[in-house]
Length: 125
Image (cartoon, rainbow, N blue to C red):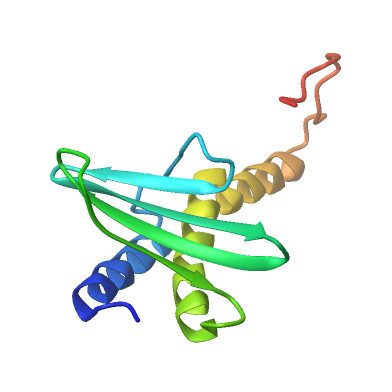
């Protein structure tokens, strides 16, 4: 169970993330996102291991010392998993810039000019 003080923090992160007011970054882990604050940092991650799905968060102080870290498995703790997964999805969409990308492409398609690039190998992958 997530303590109230951490729930309050997560609630605010979800709210501000959905408002596009949190600058999420991607960590060296493939599915982990983080945000730095003046006095600490917060990470959220989602992964699959042995056919189980997990989500976790970690809060660290300004010195990088872990204050709290909790992991929830989807099947055994669905309520906490789903709650924290909302933050994970908000962080992921914020980092990937889903809405901004779609909006920009739609605006470009609405213009009279030809769209697309004729260059080869312009994809970033």
